Length: 297
Image 1 (spheres, rainbow, N blue to C red):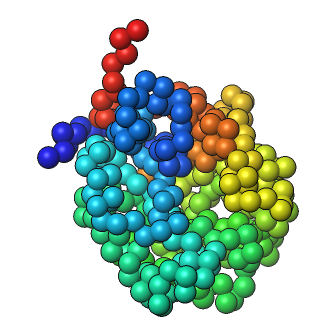
Image 2: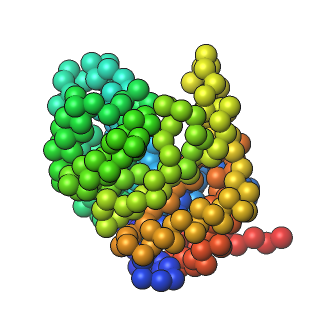
């Protein structure tokens, strides 16, 4: 039995603006009084109504994990599930399954419990920096969309060619025509391996990701995966930057039915506090989150 079943949350205005973070494991400021590490998701869900699930990028999660996460979160809590790395060409699917179709089937089966419990916000399909705007890659996006036809899908590009003067409008039109959510991203402007912030929607749902603006960490090469994660998203948005970003989301609010915002700038542990400040700037008050543990002192 889910003790949080009857809780609900509310935000001001007609459009739902859902704010959260990438993952729930590394946000130490949320867990200062936590007694058990196994309670991190329960505690996280007392602060935010959504989370971006990154574990699915590295491995298909067993059903027991998915069921556990469903039980530990309020009824209306939602997961943005990042697609497996081999399905966005970051890795060779042969390392994970006999065929790409097999891997897709496993991934879709993993999503089903979240979908049936109305806890799946969308699938995040983030393509690699070398995935440029070509006919072959457009065909692959169509293939991915067909595979995930029963799920809401968001595409995040990381190669600038998709939004250059020649292809920007065609890219947005393509996403609209294929019922794909466009990932609006704030990130360092570092040439071909980054995209500009295009404050446009292609679906009634909008998705916004804040990666920070650490251009040094974004472009630094010859690092291990662990070192890369430690510097790539090392950034603390100041209040003026957060104010400017909040104003951009208010523009999306005029057209989108639902808006999901994820702070991914957590190499230095700044994401949670940035998200809290941003929430205050937008005047959002969530109700029906998981109950927070009372502080005695």
